[in-house]
Amino acid sequence: MSSCIFCKIAAKEIPSQVVYEDNDVLAFNDLNAQAPVHVLVIPKKHLSHLDHAAAEDELLLGRLLSAAAKVAKSTAIAETGYRVVTNIGVDGGQSVSHLHFHILGGRQLSWPPG
Ligand code: 5GP
Ligand code: ZN
Image (cartoon, rainbow, N blue to C red):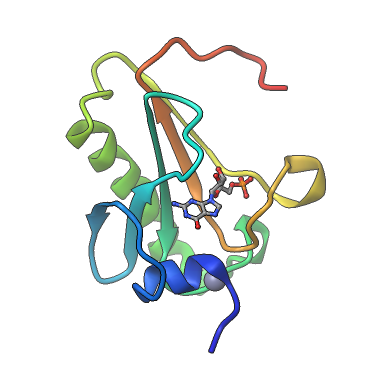
């Protein structure tokens, strides 16, 4: 059994508040929300981060971004605007080694990020 926490969430071994799901993708509320809307979009298949995506994953990557846009619409942040971000490795601030896109919205976000 995988010890990856997001693989466990994808397998429903750990509960989450699911916002969107299809065959390849799961989106759920972040446990430690940094904005009124903070959803994580993950592939059900384990990939450590964007840098480990291969040519065969290109369709999946597109599906993840399409799911992000769907989540933005269903959580009513699409009109006011939002941010999609993926952290990679130590300098990127990645804390969970399973590819995920953060969708943040519902407040004015600052730029540049810290
Ligand atoms: P990272 O720092 O890797 O970019 O983002 C990991 C995110 O996963 C963090 O925002 C953190 O709050 C969230 N997270 C970590 N463990 C869990 C969990 O068990 N459930 C949920 N829903 N979110 C989690
Ligand atoms: Zn995983």
